[in-house]
Length: 76
Image (cartoon, rainbow, N blue to C red; front, side):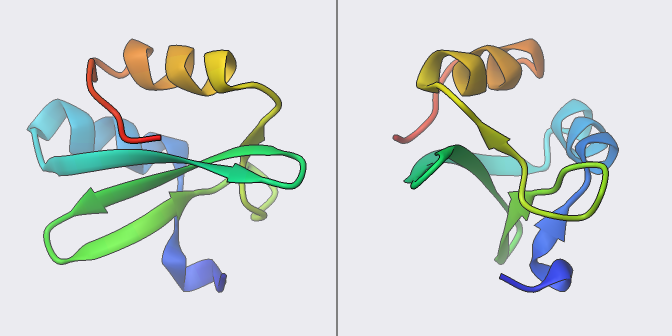
């Protein structure tokens, strides 16, 4: 996935607080779980600080991250 298809954590927090996020998906990867965010007509993956895809080692960690943003429903 290209860098243009990624979303920084700070941007995700702003979108979440504005109520712009329509859905969140936790997608299994070879080395953990990635978070895909849909808002408007686009879907982007959560980006790590260094620019690569942010992966969570466990489903629980990814769910806790999403929950802290205020989301109670995700698609796995």
